[in-house]
Length: 177
Image (cartoon, rainbow, N blue to C red; front, side, top):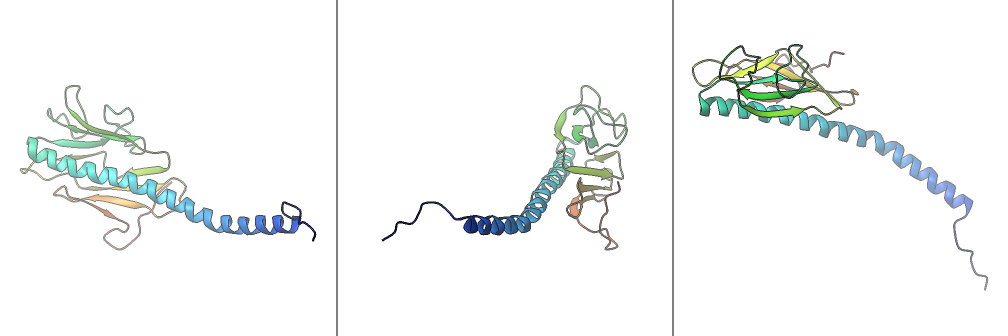
C-alpha cells in the first residue's frame, strides 16, 4: 500500500483560492455597507439623544439649552460646520441662540467620526422650557463615501426630535457635496 504524500495538490489549492475569492468578493461590499450603516446610526443616535437631553434639561432647569456646531468642543462655530462636532450647553445669559459664554455649563460635547458628514439648515437649536417654542430644523447625517442612504434628525416646534429617511413630501434626503 502506497502512502499518500502530506499537503495539497496545486489543483486543490487553486480551487480553494478561487472559491475564497468569490465568497470574499460577494461578502465585502455588504460588510462595508454594514459598517457604514452602523457608523451613521451611531451619529444619528448621538444627535437624537442630545436633542432629548436638551429638551429635558430646559424643562428641569427652566433655562434655554442650546445645541450648536463646534470645532473646538468649547464654543459654537459661526460657519455651521456640524461635521466637526457639536456641543450642548445651558444658555444662561441668552447672548444669542448660538453663542456660549465662559461660565455657562457645558452638558455634552461630541466629535463626529470620520465616516459621517452632517449638514443642517440651522446654526443652532435652542430648547426653551414651557414658555416659548424651540428652534425647529433638520440635521441630515450622510455617509462620507455615499455607500448608504442618509438619515435625518428632524426637530419640531415643540422640540421633539424624530429620525427620518424621507422628508414630509416623501422625497429621500440627499447629501449635497
